[in-house]
Amino acid sequence: MKFSSLLSQYTLLSLLPSTLAYPGMGEQLSQLQKSPNKKRNSGELLGDLKTLSSSQLTTIGSDIKAILQGSKSAESSTIDQSIPAGNVGTAACKADLCCVWKWIAYEMTAKFNGTSGRCTKFARAAVRLGFHDAGVWSTSSSYGGADGSILLTDEINRAENAGLELIAEQTKAWYNKYKAYGVTMADLIQFGANVATVVCPLGPRLRTFVGRKDNARAGPTGLLPAETDSADKLISLFKAKTIDAHDLVALVGAHTTSQQHKVDTSRDGDPQDSTPGLWDVAFYGETLSSSTPVRVLKFRSDVALSKHSEAKSEWQAFVSGQGHWNSVSDPSPFDYAKAYTRLSLLGVNNINDLKECTKVLPPERKSFVSQDQVILNRWLNGEFDQLNDMVDNAVMLTGVTTGGKKN
Ligand code: HEM
Ligand SMILES: *[C@@H]1O[C@H](CO)[C@@H](O)[C@H](O)[C@H]1NC(C)=O
Image (cartoon, rainbow, N blue to C red; front, side, top):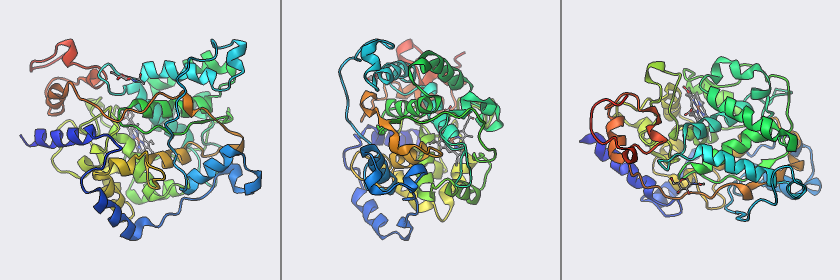
């Protein structure tokens, strides 16, 4: 049947290690080089980097500057495989800045990694939480951004944050557990987004910086997008955050992993592409496609963006562009990691003083075998009631192999 052949194509694609070439890659690249849209505006600097001279920059400061300008990759595979220096709170652990973050990474990974091998609803929501804290900022804001305010104030209760309740509760619990060890809410939220991203199969491993300051003041209003916004509105909203249309197209690719709750509450758990819990590029093609499985709920904002003149060539390039969207090759100037790194630093005015703890993140997973694909396909095509947790937990392994409703 039509859907299954579509699906198996996507599954195949997602099985390709992201380091491998994919069909048509050469063509895509040459198209891009020719594309008039490749002109980019968002090498724009942020925060203190705008005023510091090169000679004043720390190693981290100059790396972040290069990432923002697209001359250095925002990804890293450097891993510290040793056990943490000591338990949290011990002198040995306190002496090592990244020690507490290593414990936090273990705890987050356990919550974010599903028994199906996909990333869980907590992971998906953690990525969105990272966006919703940092995104409350524009070049005309004097406060807001990646400052922890989404969870330190009542910002979380704003309508645009509906759906984030569970991750909010979980992140506050982590904060209460670790704040005595110098962990800020602002960092915890961005660290969570980065751990979540890399725990999702095929997700990039972003360089991860800590040292952001918290702000107990709720951020300005009206700066987060709505699912009903026009593409023009979305593009201008993000431009005001120094995020250009190409970066925006890369960022909304995070919906590849998503399962919506609030856009249509009668369809709680319905995914935005046929491979929820995977950081693949199926989302881009399926947003354009007219024949996606019934359970795939496309956001109006994504559909609008995919057709906009400033966005569509980039959207198209990601359709078969796992490596382009989410590359480990350095530098890959259009990709998700670069755009998210920028997002994660909005409103941060001490970028030059940040430190790096990328090494404590879990390793990337460059391939994924979908053991429960048969059941997943049936679910996507409308069988069973909302098997909301199926994406997280391998149903095949727990015995649901026949048709009909699952309660
Ligand atoms: C064009 C701008 C965007 C709009 C209009 C938008 C809108 C939405 C909406 C309506 C949801 C569903 C929430 C729910 O019902 O539970 C959602 C989910 C999500 N969004 Fe976005 N979004 C945008 C950009 C982004 C960006 C920039 C990121 C991150 C980089 C992001 C990451 C996510 C993730 C990971 C989810 C899934 C959450 C979950 O499964 O619980 N979105 N988004
Ligand atoms: C997540 O779980 C899968 C198996 O389901 C495993 O292969 C993978 O290593 C785990 N990831 C981490 C970071 O622990």
